[in-house]
Structure formats: C-alpha cells, structure tokens
Amino acid sequence: MAIERTLSIIKPDAVAKNVIGEIVTRFEKAGLKVVEMQMKSLSKEEAEGFYAEHKERPFFGDLVSFMTSGPVVVQVLEGENAIALNRDLMGATNPKDAAEGTIRRDFAESIDANAVHGSDSAASAEREIAYFFGK
Ligand code: RTP
Ligand code: MG
Image (cartoon, rainbow, N blue to C red; front, side, top):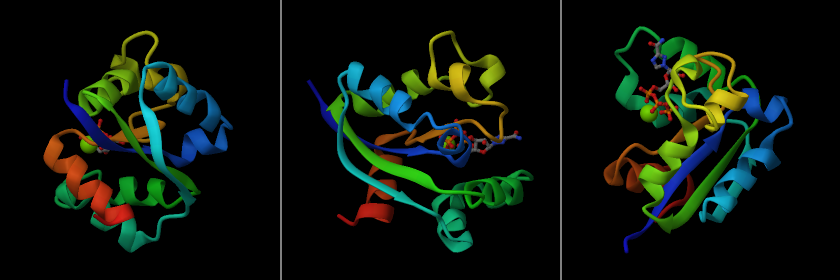
C-alpha cells in the first residue's frame, strides 16, 4: 500500500462550465482525499514555470494563454496509488482519445481545453505540490 500525494488542477474551461463539484466528486468516489485546495488565477509567470518542461514545444504559448484565461482550482489529492489513479480518472490528453467514463471524455472540449491537469510521476508530483503549496 503506497499512500501518495498528487497535484490536480481543474482548468479554466471546467471552472467556466461549472463542473468543479462534479470533478471533485469523481476524485472522492475513487477514494482520493482533497488535502489542499485553492482557487486562483495563474499569472503568466506562474503558468510558464509550472509547465516549464514544455517550454520548447510548439503549443507552449497556447497552453500558457489557456491556463491564464480564467480561474483554476489547484488541489493536492491523497490516497493509495494517487498519482496513477488520478491519471486514470483524467483520461488521455486529447479528449477524443479518452476512455468512456473519464473526466476528459465527459467534460473536455479539445486537446487544449482539456479540463484537468494531473502530475505524471512521483518526481512531478513532488515538484508541483511544492510549486503551489510549499514543502
Ligand atoms: P497535463 O500536464 O495538463 O496534465 O496534460 P498531460 O500530462 O495529459 O499532457 P502534457 O503532454 O503534459 O501536455 C500539457 C498540456 O499541453 C497541451 N498539449 N497540446 N497540441 C498538442 O500536441 C499538445 N500536446 C499537449 C494539452 O493541453 C496538455 O494538457
Ligand atoms: Mg503533463
């Protein structure tokens, strides 16, 4: 049993759609516990730093514009196998490829406006949690 923590962001498209509660309910029903939660608007610098691993990618500018287009909900989720479990609940990056019953399949519009972020590894989770909430 590995109890992990992972960083989740409910992105501006999902906040605008008024589905914060539905998304959090999916985490809770899957056994993940919300242990930190903050609604905020990311500055350009915060979004750039958060997604720094993608800074050379062609979609980086669009990604930063999108992530600063409205408020987001930043959360730390805790539970058994939380990092992989959250990625499973989210579904594939492109909602067109996301499995039935996943958050992105049900709430996302496009590969850009794809409803949620989730840490993709233990190292990412550690960095991302510290980025928003400190150690
Ligand atoms: P996230 O980091 O937001 O949880 O998404 P992810 O792991 O599923 O995907 P990642 O590869 O980390 O990409 C970060 C975000 O960049 C946008 N993206 N666009 N046009 C493209 O080919 C492309 N690839 C990625 C997506 O919005 C993705 O969520
Ligand atoms: Mg990612």
